[in-house]
Image (cartoon, rainbow, N blue to C red; front, side):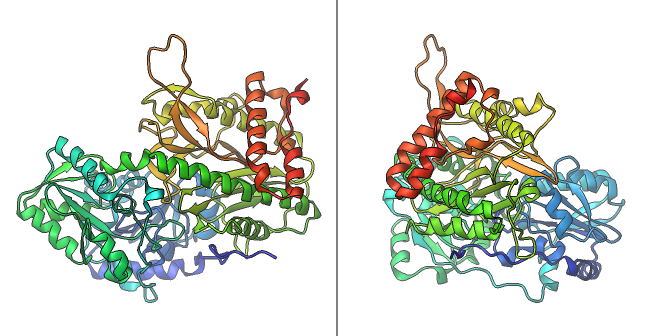
Amino acid sequence: MFEARFQSFEDQAERGAGAERLAALRAELARRGLDGFIVPRADRYQNEYVPPSDARLAWLTGFTGSAGVAIVLADRAAIFVDGRYKVQVAEEVDSASFAVEHLVERPPAAWIEANLAAGKKLGYSPWLHTVDGAEQLAKACAAAGGNLVPVAGNPIDAIWSARPAPPLGAVVTHDLRYAGEQTPHKIERVRAEMEKFAADALIVSDPHAVCWLFNIRGSDVPHTPIVLATAILPKDERPRLYVDSRKLDNAVRHLIEQNVAVHAPEEFERDLAALGANKRAVRLDPAACPEAIARLIADNGGKLLRGVDPIVPMKAIKNAAEISGARAAQLRDGAAVTRFLAWFDNEAPSGKLTEIDAVEALESFRRDTGLLKDVSFPTIAGAGSDGAIVHYRVTRRSNRRIAPGELFLIDSGGQYEDGTTDITRTVAVGAPGSDARKNFTLVLKGHIAIARAVFPDGTTGAQLDTLARQFLWRCGLDFDHGTGHGVGSYLSVHEGPARIAKLGAAPLRRGMILSNEPGYYRTGAYGIRIENLVLVNEAEPVAGAEKPLNAFETLTLAPLDRRLIEPAMLTADELAWLDAYQARVRGALTPLVDAPVRAWLDAATAPLTAARY
């Protein structure tokens, strides 16, 4: 009945090959006179999602998650992942070959200090590590008495015999009705920022920033509509875009060249070296820019100006067209999700549905809009204990039937030209148990606390994160991921600089879109997560306020499962917010769904106020 076109359910991990590939890498390192090598999950653009040609960590270890790093020494090897991937890494990686370490609690630098012997040479690729990251690794090696050694050619590439070809996705222009700002004006704004730090040129190494600046999109990376490209923005010359010409048809190239000089990617390194040789002051972001770029400039005599890429906050603060597009995308997406929830509620109690069935159905409902370009990430669809795996990805091997009495967690999103969506709903299949209801309501209380927050302009995500956790903490519970991440405008579903997390140091500014997604995960039993996207807006006037105040507008529109809520645990204000949200969902979506779904929606969003008393 349904099928998925934008995501696969094949098992991508190759656990059985880990030992053989590890041995081959060690032999290659020995041939090069190296005692070890660092393998990050990164490409030369520092992308979160990488094309198959750059999935070196997955090829070597079998780990397919979106964050991790491996370190290989002659006598030991370790893979580092965060708490989201605790279960996944155990399933995908051969523990006899790689020890599993926590990416945050015992990071690679600490492991290097403890395990690298004095005098040993640890290799790394300067293209795959940021300036800041390489400096941390160098300090760790020095503390251990060893040396961090840059390598010109990646040793994994030398032994990867069936490495996929680099992507050649077509470049398309991003229409002004969605972008909301012409490229020349964006360039002018960026150059105004460059004047403040007296830069002769800005390095734009992040493809997301390249795409935003030049109003282009691509398809080089799964689920994220970017083109793998870099740029140099001189203060007084035409910007230079470095992109494979095979990605450009004549019409697109003509439009781009009205504002930008197009160059082959091979010319990028030459031009970086020329900036150095001409003693230019060059701005780059040490937290995001590959160290190789900094080396090419500094080693040739250039002056490095380290600081945040000014494009990053500009891109994160959405303009009026982008905000309008986000609202339209959320409304369209919410109707598709609601059609899915109604379908699921009718079909799941039979016990015949599988996790893959659910993923295929939801993607199909989104495709029915006629405007879906892709999913924004592979759908997370976990029944029962699978829901407790934070970044669970169902495969044909792991696929299971969804049984009555279980909780089902589905985290998904869509890429539309007018906006990127991300939503999680946890639903009951049949009557939920009291333990699940209690913990769902604790998560809901934290979600509502974020949604209702009023905070001074410039507040950071770290300052708000506790609001989402406080009710879980009181019961000795927590979740091992951030409460929220930034979201792009037909770009990455995970966008900096702002996030709601324990380490979220960036201020939240009006126009930013973030997720609000607290959760709770009981290993071996169930997972709970409630996620809506929110927009930072000016708050309603507050009498006597001495500071500008902001608040969140909830953008996502889809019902929350009433069966999982304990009304008696909610305060009057929380209950009022919940009933108002459900009523808003009902009012917005009713005109967009057919009669059977409309009837289901009416029941699913009925007020809970009376149930509390």
